[in-house]
Amino acid sequence: MRAPARAAKTIVLGDIGSTFIKLAGVSADGELLARASVATTHQDLGAGVAAAQALLAAKLGAALPIEEVILSSSAGGGLRVVVLGFERDLTIKAAMRASATAGARIVGVYTDAELSAESADRFHARAADLALLTGGTDGGDEQSIIHNAEALARLAPELPVVVAGNRAATERVRRLLGNGRPVEFVDNVMPRVGELDSGSAQTAIRRIFIERVIGRGRFASASTLAGAVRMPTPAAVLAGAQIVAALGARRAQLSAPVVVDVGGATTDVHSVIAESEPVPGYATTGLADAVLTRTVEGDLGLRENAEALVEAAVREGCVEAGEEDGLRRAAQRRRTQRDYVASDEQELLTDERLGRLASTIALLRHAGVLQTSLTPAGAVLRRTGRDLRAASCLIVTGGVFEHSACAGAVASAALREVHARGGLISPDLEVLTDSSYLLWAAGLLAASHPLAAERVAEATLVEATHR
Image 1 (cartoon, rainbow, N blue to C red):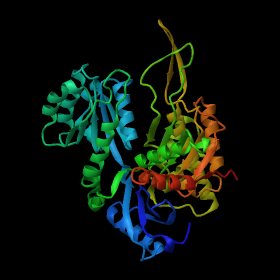
Image 2: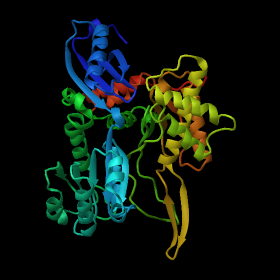
Image 3: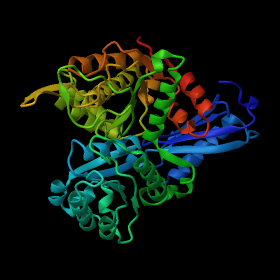
Image 4: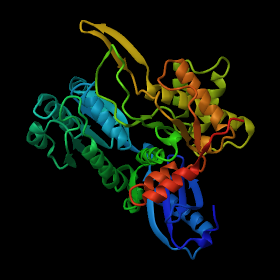
């Protein structure tokens, strides 16, 4: 990091996280100038951002003009979406992929039969910010999306809706939902069987997040930030992963990255990998892989969801004999004190252990395993997740890895355990650390300053330590 006085202008990049608000000042060519962070002020996000900006300004120097402020946000659980569709293997899977890639946390998934059995109270308890309504290929089934539109009118008459299903049903769906709620019609996420078209749905989801969720709703105190918030934080990290993959043209190890982002509320996994080759002798079913994929695990966090993480680890058999009670006590402390920072060796080790558990479970869910079944037509090969065996590296990001002296050992242990459980990933994958915790910042820069984004990403990625 060079002396701030040499910079003519500064771009301020910020992430409003569930635990901390983080800001970074970079030059127009992507050189890191200064960083600042404060605990997230959930009651007034705007005040927290202002406090962080004051700290950053003190480090940058008063004479440095700020050219632009670009923010992402995942505070309060980020963008919460319910997905509605026809059936789970095709249209619902396509809708879930579109939502996750847009940076959403999926808090509910319904077929038409499941939505019929839902009560307004249970649906409301999911605290969704919007619904993604899909169903039917273009010219195909119309009844499912119409049925779900009728159910939405009953269950959640004010919930914003993005409609991305069979275009033939547009007018009927419009009449059913046209009660003054925000409704946006976009391209069908599955216009033909097996074909994914999620671009316009992703754009609409992000726009509603900024206009309706940040500007109003749960983030009303942050309405003054709406102009600066460009996307949910997970979308920024996913864009950062794309930047990393682009660097693979000159650094082969970066060409097909898997990124594990362990946060206070969720653990996200992002992967940029070309479609895998079919396995000879087997038929495959369901929606084909996308090059760019993201999954989010809302029960795996190191602060807000620490207790849920430990319970998930116990259920998965990841907890060793004798450590369960200690992990539960540590998780309770971290849940009730979200801005807790480990200050001694034992607490640092506990954070690393929780980080390893979160990484293991999230990777196993993202990668999945192979399952073979026999049908009258022959053997059918199904995957419960994504094939990561062609990955070129694993990148770990998040506060736990930034502060760890052995991030590589933590991540490598997670890789070995995932592989031992049948997960489709190499146990020997090279591990890199987001050493300055700035991959999200590279993603925020990607659209407007692509060369600066590449410089930020390349500078923050270092070989992980194994101590």
